[in-house]
Amino acid sequence: MKITAIYPGTFDPITNGHTDIVKRAAKLFEHVIVAIAANPSKEPVFSLKKRIDLATRVLAELNNVSVRGFESLLAQFAKQCGVQVIVRGLRAMSDFEYEFQMAGMNRTLIPDIETIFLTPAGKYTYLSSSLVREIATLGGPVGDFVHPDVYAALCQKMCQY
Ligand code: COA
Image (cartoon, rainbow, N blue to C red; front, side, top):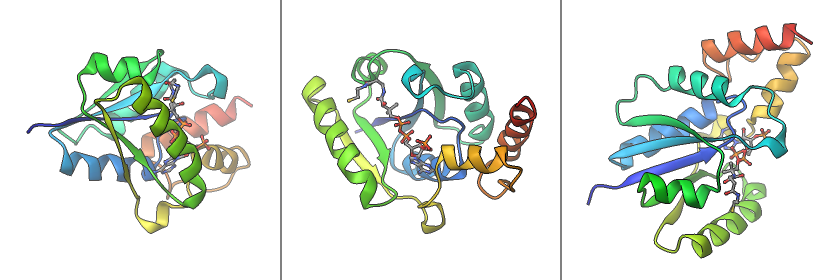
């Protein structure tokens, strides 16, 4: 059975930890859609267009991965894309409660789509987009955590503050 998976998130911006999960998912599924949520409630620093552009560039070498933005409910978008699986990353136990709640709600909304969890490499378990942004804002080195294109975008964005 050929399975298409969707990996949703805010990706503000995409980090090496996200990429690690995408690469793992790309080995397991026929096609992986990286779905970037507009998520206005999180007040993203990068516009949806910019987040899509960065993720597209970072993931360009993965032939079975595509990047799309969405502004609706994940459940609606996943159904519209015809996916069978939602992929989420679990970095630590602290992620679990929120993820469990979201998986349960998505199952109620779209019973025929399964949520599965992948864990990133150990070196990414403490990584988050907001930490990367904070370090970059304060002039710290974030080159080990993000793709060079994201690094450049962060530098450009932080220069505006
Ligand atoms: N490596 C590095 N960081 C990771 C990571 C990994 N493997 N996995 C998660 N993170 C970080 C993210 O960078 C993010 O950090 P931040 O909060 O500091 O920015 C944090 O963990 C959580 O981000 P993410 O996993 O992307 O989740 P999210 O909360 O940003 O996104 C959505 C959640 C978009 C999937 C969810 O809100 C959604 O589905 N929205 C659409 C509306 C909807 O359907 N709502 C009902 C849901 S039931």
